[in-house]
Image (cartoon, rainbow, N blue to C red; front, side):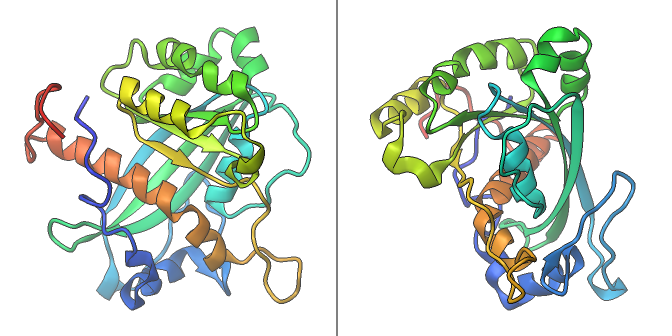
Length: 258
């Protein structure tokens, strides 16, 4: 697996907030609402701004109740479930995200296909995990800041899911960061985990998104601002690994200084 790039070295971090970036975001928004895309749909851009699309399959792993479905909903601009219900099978969600490359100022439309499966279903049906892992480009390992056991389960998750897939991107995401004052996972433990595993570790909030003036509809632009760091982080890791695999970038040895 390619070594993780430094944050912001591959993708321009705040490009989505620029005038140019907002022009591209129009294709995934409709009247400030996020557009929902099916598996065979894609955003439509005017011919002068047509861009290439990079597609990736991402499996979301974590203990029951950590907020896997809620996080994917936030990334897609959907309503976050108020009450937890175990995902009964495999749920797929497509999220599009335009991003600008640092190297050549090109804009790429990233297509992320998230696969979310309930923990009970994974344990009950032996074919579920292989199906989720098949041809996956990245694994997201989730824990909840309010559930110490979910954090302690990460090494087991990593071994069980990614142990036989060394070439797949691995990232860790802490959910319910808005409840950090009541965290069961102190910062010193996060620091120790990062030093031991050398994996990207991001944080997301689980509160419902901001609303438009009608008080009911989710504010699509505000929702994108809340999750841009996760979408950019994914794009950065995946694009960098693709460039290394294609021989366009060197892959430094594991013991090389960061």
